[in-house]
Length: 554
Image (cartoon, rainbow, N blue to C red; front, top):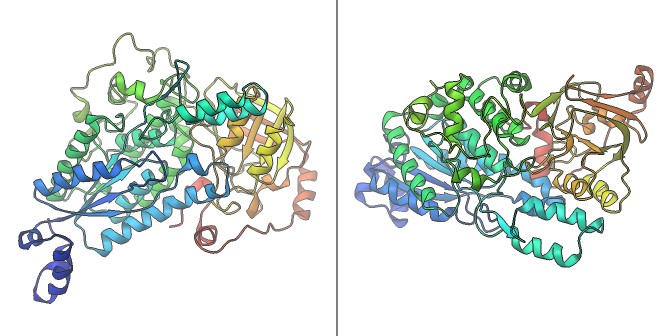
């Protein structure tokens, strides 16, 4: 049980190490216990993580009461909701790598025998899992929980409501006073953004993967059940340490397929594609866009959840969470029930006593009448995206769009044009040089997509980019275009007025320009001077892979 810590604290020659640890609260008996890390992502930079230290305290007490010695440490987070639409957003995806690296550094550097990791906002969640798999020491993930919806005029609202209100205000459909009221009421307290956005998407994927306890993804941040879940996760971790049950024993190709399946069934975020590819890499498993295509063909969208649907995650929690859906999918052989989990049991065993949803609920549709008969995350290829692109097509946007390109070299340039009312119907908005290298950082385009929806253009324009989308983005949008423009990808060749065709049925995205013309443009294409700054962004741009392989730096 003390596979790693014993090397740091056992023997006379380790007296200096023990002396240091005595200063932070160790006594003689503690040196004989496994040392267990409490990797907290607590931060006051975002409501998603503002309560996580309270959960870390619960975990500390549970670890200390069940034969371990808790060792607390913190890492960083970046708030997507706050940084969205600004230069700060360049650090969002970069933070995933920083967080996973920092957890690795502390756990390995301090000789911890296992750890429990807490995530709340979008990037610290996959980051925790990436560190778990990289280190491959007994570990369990705990989700901080979803936020409760805000209420305005008896209607439930959230952060996406604020972004879309900005578009309505710019279009003259909402006055300044109402915009201010929505701003004040959208975020009532702690917890992650309340729809099937990236945080809730990844929480469900991690649970389906087996790295968190049953239904831990479907709890509100301020609930007693979240504290209970944390306590139970801590006890499960001690059992994993005793059995030497490690993340790579749990995460297999089949469990990754389970994660993809639940993301599809819930109508989850496009970011799940990036993160699951990155997680697979840390697990030393082969996963590609083709796996998302394959699983999407047989997995229906069953959840009527925001942003494309009506309901919030808190409302899904109220009818039983994600577990009843997983049980249905396991019973119908759409998920692998024989996959091992951190409980020490299989997924099917964990779900055995889960009750079905109430008969009158309208959030999760039956398999016989799905929201969409196949997956909503569509991988597109064509002369614009030879290595692939990812579209989120719920069915409500339609499956085909053809229009003339309007090209922007940055998100800011595009947003200004939208808010000034200078985007006409039938336009394919092209935002380039926002990829992993070109950003650098692959920013999310929630501000432009929300502005489009707020101005009533959601059914009339498309948006394509080598950047990413927030889980809150909806409409006819295509991101993750690879290779990106900054490294000479075809996106760099598009000119204003070019016709672009996007077909979700054929799974194609093409520039309707002759091969001869494309060849001429390629010859004239100059190397892009990629944005550089000192520090983390420069390192990231130098090391990062393309979106189709997860935009990783390892």
